[in-house]
Amino acid sequence: MEENKIKSSQPDLLTGILFAVLATDALRALILTFSFVNLLAAAGFLLVAAMLLIKQKDIALSVSFAVITLHNLICLFAYHGFFNKFLMFLSLAAYAFITFMSFAVDTDYLPKYKKSFTGIFFIPIILIALSNLISFLSMIRFGGWFLFRSLIYGVVEIIAVVLICKMTAFANGAPEPKSFQSNYDAGPEYAPSILPQEAFCDMVKHVLLLLFTFGIWFFIWIYKVTGYLNVVKDEEQRNPTTKLLLCMFVPFYNIYWTYKSAQRIDKLARQEGLSSDIATLCLIIAIFLPIISPIIMQDKMNSILTKNPATAYQPAEPAADTANELKKYKELLDTGVITQDDFEAKKKQLLGL
Image 1 (cartoon, rainbow, N blue to C red):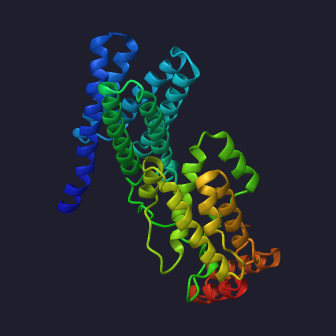
Image 2 (image 1 turned 90 degrees about the horizontal axis):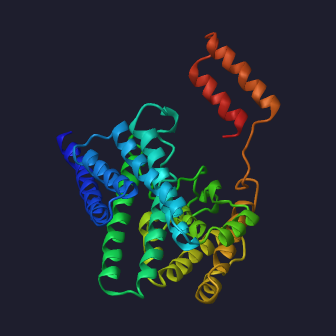
Image 3 (image 1 turned 135 degrees about the vertical axis):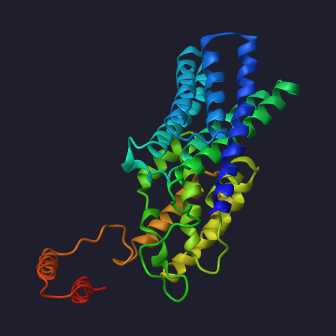
């Protein structure tokens, strides 16, 4: 028990230190130009760092993130030019998400949302990473200290946001998934039915999101698909967060990810009896027209899921007469006429399990 406490305190300490580093940059801006906006930024980062260092993860931490969010909101309206507003919008959306997540998880005001973030905690990470990446690229022309400062503080903020998001989303004992579990039993090999139903995505929606979200959906999709394809047996388990960060910051890594992921999709498709050889095609297209590869890959995953009724992406509902039969046997169970074992056996028989 004591060892677990020590381990759980380490992320708090490291995250608190990282936010303290971010606070120093905000304080520098405040000293150079004293203003209410700069004061909000410095106060917000200092409060977050302090709450984490003293391990006070309650409403005070949520309010601290709300101060940073308020700073970003004011800057969004104060800044001029589309480029500056876009960067501030990304940061605003990220910290607004973190504020709500902290409020839901670290307090008791929204209990039904406490375990709702384990599958979407990566959204602020993507937003902050994109914001800092674009900002860094814009500083290349200045070089020197400006570029170095953008790189250092950008990396610090990304790591801090990764830690706080994972720490908050999985604070209530929910295990961090290394793969997305299937709703079906796997066969002796890697049966295609093990591909989760959640892997299905309407193609019109998928294409529109790829075109009009400035790359954000593409990175969300990479995270999700990495997890979905972990169900393939005899393949190395891949951590979705690690692969996401590699695709975002390592040049050309997304091409490698596309090829390896397409190979896994080919395996699943062939097991289902579908003709599939998209790996090489996706590799070539990823080099010259990268937006097409995720369309091909998603279409093939949809085909796998809708190949037969057992894997079709549609919720299975018992027929009306089956539901009535189950209700009848439940009443018999409640009155003590049949045992729990009898009821379970009959339920499996009616549902075809």
